Image (cartoon, rainbow, N blue to C red; front, side, top):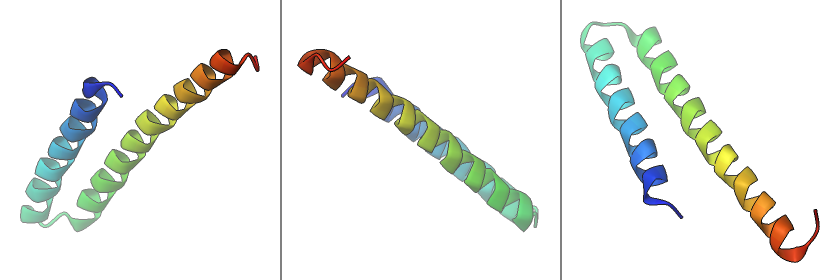
Length: 65
């Protein structure tokens, strides 16, 4: 596992947390929720891409491709 992946996920989490805090202080609850959902989707896309790479590696190791 690459350490950059952890930093990417942590960076997205920090940005989403700050935006969520700012939007809640500005009484924009709906936008804060949408920001949280967008951050979750971004992290899930990153993880799905990494899992796809894992499956490609397993296929090439076992000669299934």
